[in-house]
Image 1 (cartoon, one colour):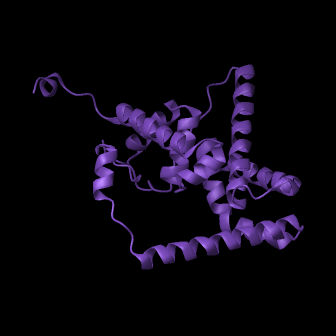
Image 2: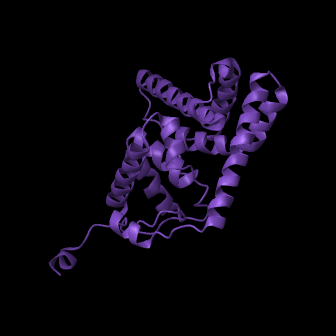
Image 3: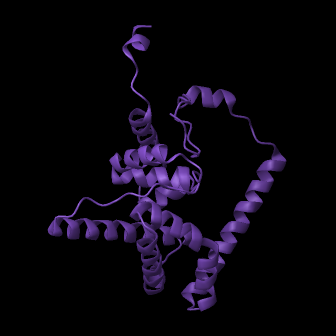
Length: 226
C-alpha cells in the first residue's frame, strides 16, 4: 500500500541499529560548529520568549502565537479530529500558559512546555467528549487524518490510514503524530509526554509496526507458498 503522501515508507523495513551505525558519518567540525551556533541561538530566543511572557508582556504571547500557533493548531486538529475543537484547545492552552507562567522553571524549553500543556488539554478534551458520547449513546469519536503531508491522497487510501491511526493507542498515536507529522525530535517528544527518549523511539517503532500490519494487503496463499 502506498504512503499516502506521509513521510513514512510503509513498504520499507525499519533499519537495524547496526546498519544505522555503518551508514552514520561523522560530522565535520564546520557542520558541528554551525549546529551548535544554531542551537544556542534557538535557546536564547526561547529564553527571551519565556522571560517576556513571565514579565506579563503581551508581545511575548503574540510572538509565541505567531511562531508556533499554526503548528499547535495542526497538532490539536490531528489529536481532536476537527478544526473547531482544535482552535478551542489552542485558545485554552494560551489561557493556561498565562495562568501557569510563574511555575515555569526552565527545566525544558519554553516551547516544549507550551506544547506539553496543549497535548494535555487535547487529552482532557478527548476524554470529556468520549464521556459525553457514552452518556448520550452516540457513536465513538471521530479521528481526523493528518493532512500536512498527504494533501493529494486518494480518498480510499486516506480513509484506510485514518482508520488505522484510530486503532493505535492514544500514546502511540501521539508519538507518531508528533514525530512523523509535526516533525519534533525524540528529545522534545520525551519532554512533552514525560517519558524517556528511548521510550519515545520504542513507541514510534511499535506505532509504525502496527500501522504497517494494518495497512499492508494480506498475502495471497500463492505468495506465501513461494
